Image (cartoon, rainbow, N blue to C red; front, side):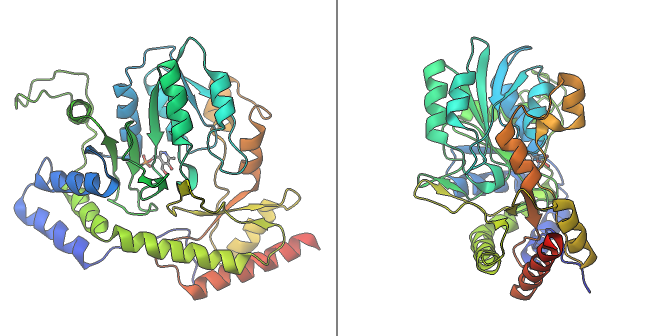
Length: 373
Ligand SMILES: Cc1ncc(COP(=O)(O)O)c(C=O)c1O
């Protein structure tokens, strides 16, 4: 029986056409395709400008650089995220101050954020986990009151909306990622949505070895990096962007079908539904298993029957690197830890078929029944 993978990109003829255009142009890097991609993305997310970069992690690093953090500056962030969203703070010598998450949204708990602000706090780094928007108004209120920068890791949330506005259209930098498991892909790649042209120019310079805009190839005005997105990747991204709305619609349909199929299964909690303030962009389909269920046993059963799954995702403070360097321990962020113990990502992508979803649901139902006996 064929394996049902966790994720899969959807690449079509338009991607091939635009990639061919780049290959024939001979402008494989720093060419016009990157500009076209940046403009199209800015338009789609309602940002003043967008800087394309080589990965979400690179985008996060540069967004942190823009916040002008110094060694020892504290940044409040969530432990329930992918490692890169906190690692980017360490790159600049900042201190990641984790606070626990809200048990429903799994995003930053606002009261915990407020309580964690100290004299050393310089920024808040919010994550829209699983594509569900963080409480941006509350967070920007706290940031304003205390004179902090607000950064948004929207790597999982392209296409999501908060209070009717697209993620990426707010005043603070928002970072997107385009690895092939994301809503849309560039292969490797990322982007930072910005509200200021000056920030955009600085970020572009930092991503291009700190070159000044004098046009001098060997003049470096800043400590820069090579975080450039190349034009072949941008071509794939532009083709994907052209049908992003269709992609998002299909993903929402896949999610709705899962909700119907999985609702009757005891011990499986479905992802939080949208409300008037939050419109999720479907990146992954993560269910929460009841506490007493042996998740490893369920995953082994799924694997035996050709259904991929992942314990998605582990809390950052319990990663070996963080434990070793900072002495972080179990029990520090109980809501995040509980979510990490229970969460299970099921196969999810734009073109997952109804038949495949039925197979996933049946297999999961049987895996849970075996676990009970
Ligand atoms: C929340 C979050 N932040 C950052 C990243 C890093 O993105 P990239 O893999 O493009 O570096 C990811 C990637 O999955 C992510 O999910």
